[in-house]
Amino acid sequence: MTIQIARLAEIVDEAARHAKAIPQLTLELPKLTVEDGYEIQALSVARRVDRGESRVGIKMGLTSRAKMQQVGVDEVVWGRLTDAMMLEEGGSLSLKRYVHPRIEPEIAFLIGSKLEGHVSGLEAMAAVDGVAPAMEVIDSRYRDFKFSLPDVVADNSSSSGLVIGAWRPPESDISNLGMVLGVNGRTVQVGSSAAILGNPVRSLVAAARMASQAGESLEPGDIVMAGAATAAHPLSAGETICAEVEDLGSVAISVEG
Ligand code: OOG
Ligand code: MG
Image 1 (cartoon, rainbow, N blue to C red):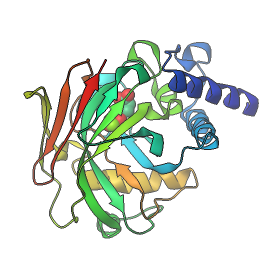
Image 2 (spheres, protein in one colour):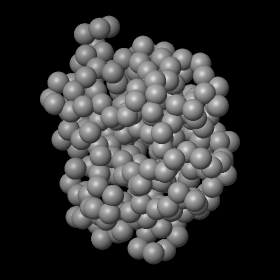
Image 3 (tube, rainbow, N blue to C red):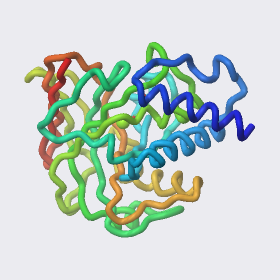
Image 4 (spheres, rainbow, N blue to C red):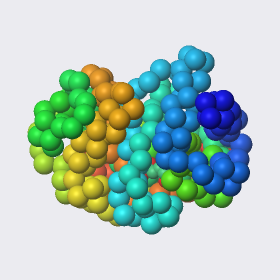
């Protein structure tokens, strides 16, 4: 199986690197488990690190009902973030780098002190140095953006880009902040941070627990993306996308052809 896992890691990594859609792994291997998926993910991200990318944190996914419904998978997942995925706030991205990218409004945490294993919401927040409005660009490498749970986990939970706004000290309650996604000034998605597991802090708690299961921890300087509060918007050339989070501010990015 180890050889098989390494081969599958290469397949998903190459698909991401060249923005080429692939068939779902579970079509050929219906017995693939979620655990296999996480092993494939770890090896595929290790390939990126071997090419010179560095780890910047982790992302949580499918932490809201809106997202679970949009992709038809109803389990919380996580993925690994690298520096190559960071997009400049107020800058632009090129569609050429992606298969069929979508964007979604999120909240990001900046870790100030190590977090691992089972922690309470209070302990998790005590380890946070900053919170920021954010957007995630997700790009499933699978054809038609269709996958099962082991597939999406193997594909690094569709991680492909992140835009982070200005960090603010985590002083105020973030459990129920209005979140709006706008495209060229028109609102396309409206939600609340409460859609993220009832409170985005729970996503951070889950991040610490799930990363520990893989022998990893949240380290000072790490970014943790809490997961989208609304369904994602498919990107088209010429769009300027803005996510606004009540009390935290906004982030924007434009889409080139
Ligand atoms: C899976 C990743 C989900 C989120 O914020 O819920 C995710 C996908 O939708 O492709 O990033
Ligand atoms: Mg996301």
